[in-house]
Image 1 (cartoon, rainbow, N blue to C red):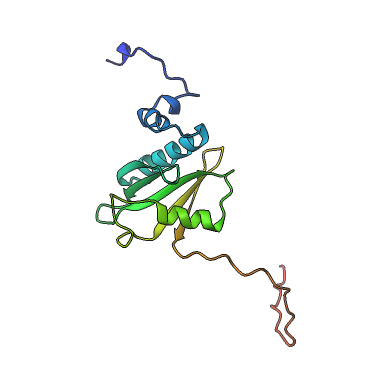
Image 2 (tube, rainbow, N blue to C red):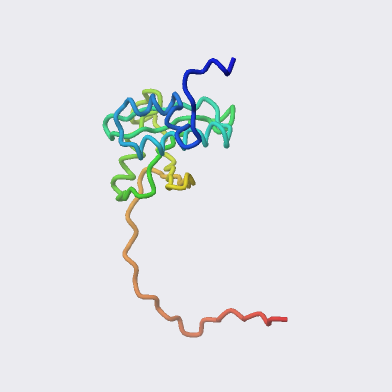
Length: 158
């Protein structure tokens, strides 16, 4: 049955021939965003065994996001794949959390949490959970030396 295939899949281009990759690419995102979305999709399905994994597009933000359930009885979670080379401001991260819409929920019904999946060129993925209401931290101040502070004792090498 496998002998009847009309095309040959090479090890270098297998991801580009995957049906989900073609579906994502049809929406017109750049190749880096398409590849990041596909890598996260495969990681969630094949490595983390998530259920009900679906890819959605957010026309407002011009991104893709993925929804799925980590376990059978858990709620849907939102994953937003991005490239490691992408710089995001605090406002852009807040827009990501508030902009993705799970199954047509209204603004009040949405869970104000999204997970940012940062994909590097070596296919490694780091997941960071983002919550609505992020604020930029205060600028760093000079460290004050506290008089009489106890310094930790050093261990002797044996």
